[in-house]
Length: 331
Ligand code: PBG
Image 1 (tube, protein in one colour):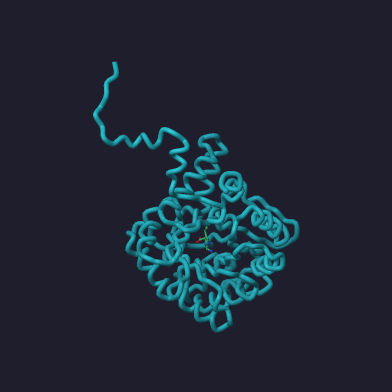
Image 2 (cartoon, protein in one colour):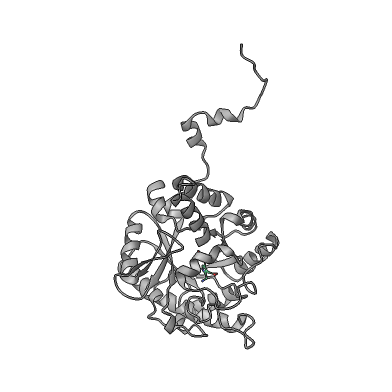
């Protein structure tokens, strides 16, 4: 005999059959939503694995060009480039950042020359170029990064990236007033059509550890807490940062990291009317990758789940290191 509850609503009805389940999916994830990070270094035919990010390599300009051409063919629509600079070239002001012939500018020229149908995004910051590894010029007492002189130098860096072919400039240094200064500087230099994607909401996060290994940008002393945000502040600070950047002319805003900050992505999404990008950072990548390599989790499932969650929270696009996995998983 069958015992029956008298239920009007049985949510499981919509889960019982796979066609039903698929038809009801409203959150999508496609290759065109992904911005692919690349670490570009000096040399030729160089492909150097990053120990703390298994599956990710530093690449010389020629190798990175081939790699990106392959991804463009598969339908990935954007890349963001980080320069790996030889240590001897770095100084306390980050001078190699302003060299129009550095690896970052060379990669922009290379992908434009190849006419890759991909947006070229430039991570605008000094931490990869300074001998001390901080995100700009230090104050005279060495206590923190000097805001206004750093902003001035960021404008020069942005113009050199735009000249080399960057379509989108993404300032990641968390200096106040960066976006307004960049917009003015880019316009004055004839680059009114170059977009600004601001890393508006960037937390001082332990999840960046593997990246600093990949980009050689670990601070030689101290940490970034005097310019990056405190994870223990609530969403109102994030909203303030995002709105300030939109007022100054940001075309898009970013939240970073992504997975542990879904509440922040959702809050920013509600409060601004420009596209929101989220950055699934190196530590998020390496944790999933390490567990998968140990056989503790199913990589494909977790990669998809982690990225769907970020899209569900409200991200229009996601910077993610999982391009190779996604090329097999999503259209
Ligand atoms: C700064 C920058 C960082 C990351 C992206 N841009 C490092 C930092 O702020 O310390 C981290 C990204 C990641 O962890 O994947 N140029």
